[in-house]
Amino acid sequence: MTLEKDEQILMVLRKSRKAYLAEYLCGVIILGLLVGLAAKGVLLPALPRNLTLGFALFCLGFAEVKRLFLRYKITPTKVITIHGFIKQTKKNIYFHPLAFIPDINIQQSRAQRILNYGTVFLSGSGTGSLELKDVDSPQKVMEIIEGLIEQNKKSQTRTIPSSD
Image (cartoon, rainbow, N blue to C red):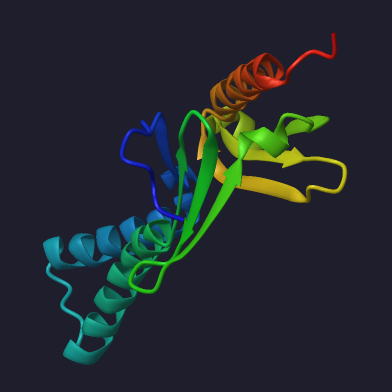
């Protein structure tokens, strides 16, 4: 399950920061309110101020930590899914069996389409499915994966001996 030494990583993907827009906005608005109150000379008691500050920092930190827990590496022969930060679970999905995948789809909500992020789904008959969740530029990712699958199909047909 390790990356071969001669295998080149074409792309590393993480969940988009845009997927955590609500958390970022919440943290920034709360911090802005605290700064605004302090600028106007309104001082909150220590406990509510510290709890509010802690919550704002938690909102910002939560989004960043959550992004660290999932990443995808795309190589010429496989997609590697890595879950976790300290304790990691890795899964290799090779393009060789994926060469027979009938469906590669993108799912985006209206907001995701405007912000240019979404989920890329790879599904096949009997091979299960793979989901690259909330990645930036999903159309570009889909085109790269389609190209790699085509390359692997061509290299697979070259290695199959003909029956003459």
